[in-house]
Length: 239
Length: 71
Image (cartoon, rainbow over the protein chains, first blue to last red):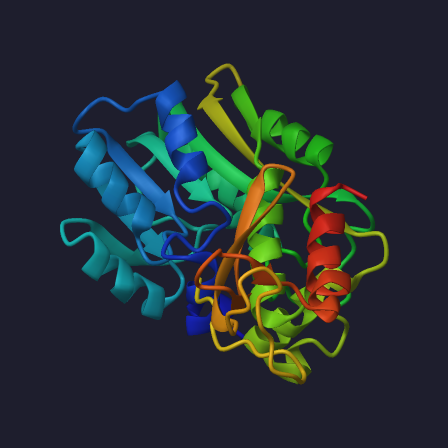
């Protein structure tokens, strides 16, 4: 299975945080809800560890950085040396229930076939009232159905915004703040067009011709991706 | 992101219409609807004017404009 987010081309295109706008949305949510020093925080799908390093250096957090990619996890260990780097599955966290003060999950869940399983795990491992800093791709317009059997990029069938909100509520989170970050996504896409000639050529460079054989995500007729960041809280009245 | 500064137009020796200086490979900052992009183009080193070739204007630039205009 292709691992586009380990690709040097993707790293060059998206920067060290591996998402549109880098740490912009992270800092925006942290400004709304700063973390007390010494908080125990999970960076879920940490990638090269940019958020983990920020949390450690600027918030004084104790950080568990988890990713399924050993390549990215090794990079995270270099970016932020004092983190606990764990290779694992977001749908089965090796973390005790009600032990975390906060979870960061940024531009990751749209890559999963069953994002609700990861969110349920975040809810289980957060302390009551714990916060989740969550950003994700959305489908502002167009089909969210996948043409390929497994997702290879975050643009392979993201959910629409209403579905994302409802899923959070259904799984026991309240939404304290919501920030539309679509401009960051579009600016990144614009840079990719100038750099590679078109978005299709960019995805071909990352995934190869065969990876794009079903039509790269950005070419689906009528499909219009968006990007959103949520600040959430674990509600304890949820049964 | 890397900016390709080795851009050359399809043909011709280009010089600045204002300064008569030969154009050199360089970069220009394009701004549109509050977003800015650095692109590799030919520029006049004296007056900073840049040559935007037709295929860039009707290709990449148009695609980016449509992206940002939410159409």
